[in-house]
Length: 241
Image (cartoon, helix red, strand yellow):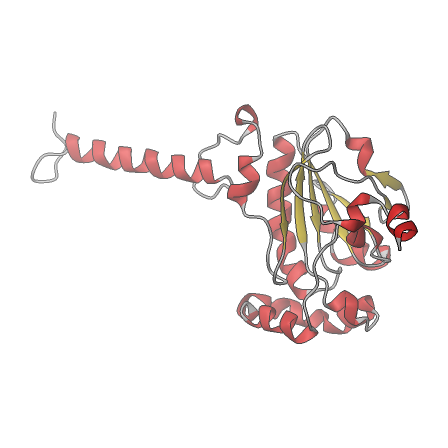
């Protein structure tokens, strides 16, 4: 038993937590190019684990991930998306939307999922319950179910896989992490933005920006404009001189 524990890397003996050095890994993109996490040392990285390429929840999340990745790119942060699927399915279903803003890697064997000690639902039924709560939004993706099953290879371990997100600093330290409890969980934009240096945060102040700060600023500006309009208006609604 002692020999066994000595032979196991530390990150396999305990779950990674905030403040830990992130373990390195090597995976391939859909073109077969090998990518290591350590090659991005010196840059902040947002590492997001999806379930598998044809998962209805994951397909529903792709547009959110695209917008988020574009925002992070403008802040100089690299987004890496890992999918528990064959490159063929990733290339068909996920990469076309994320190619310009995220590095998408295949981990069909699930080795990196294991390294990062990601969670799994207790049963496939629990996964389906989580999907059911969002079924109105997921209906367009249910048609992928046949591909879904081929992609997962009828492997219940893959079907029970839960997503996770890790924000990693320039020197490879975990700044924040979220291990999902349901198939629809991902790190909130508020938590993501809190990890972005103040001088690199978005300042577009648009009402539909993903940045919580921008949306808040938009509301403040709108309220100020309405208040000013009321001050400048006469009691009969006409604009005062």
